[in-house]
Length: 308
Image 1 (cartoon, rainbow, N blue to C red):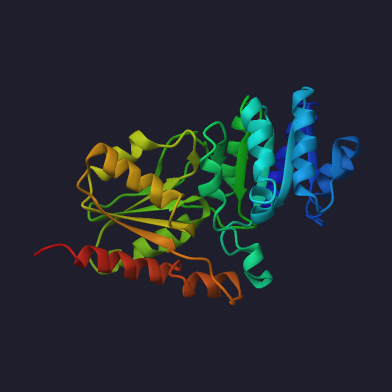
Image 2: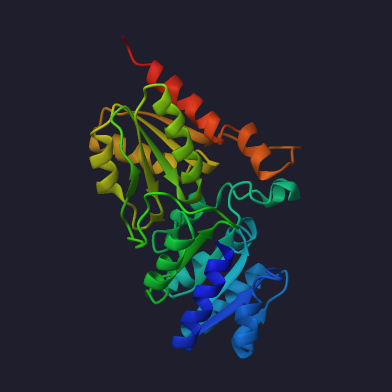
């Protein structure tokens, strides 16, 4: 997805001279297509994410459309106050790109686990949060939203396979359904949909038919679409490479509570920060219940909990 982002941004910058790109001293062997094509619009701000957002805020106020790029933890948390007091309060089109949410930088340790970014940033109601599910949707999301007037946070995966059943057109504020079933809904955040789909296939072999739906945006959030889906299934499981508080699980809980729905919900994510543990992306997903097998087991347990 990083390559899709850079390729799309380079093409957009060819058409729109307002686009500038700032990196927090990373992205080598990835960002060169933009840097070489537009050297006068590419800036390495160094390991200084607060300053990078401050510079971007000034550029946006001057009529530019700045993209700032870093690992999800560093893009969202280090400059959080600067995001709030700059582009959010002044309604400026700063684009913050956080790469590798969840455990994608697993071997780098807990400082690199992007597990809070969606939750803290969706609190800023003037900031749109986008988490595309695959390369095709990422390209469409960038093309459709890069010129919007409000600030945007893009949560992009490092890599990821295409999602079967996902159309090529990103639809801001809407829910995408990629598989249908009446027993349980697996509602996934962005790139976690691949594991949710694999879990649904496994559940099908056990006679449990699962819908798989993808949430890719907050502020606006697909609340009406979620309410419609949740009214049609007795059980729902949210799947997110994120803490269970603040992100997708909280959004779905809010919809169920505020719409008075009877759906029984279980949130599949982390309930605390990992401490003293590192490992590959796959190892950490398995360890914290986010692999396809673990998701299927959690869904089976949820469905089995129904009163007989």
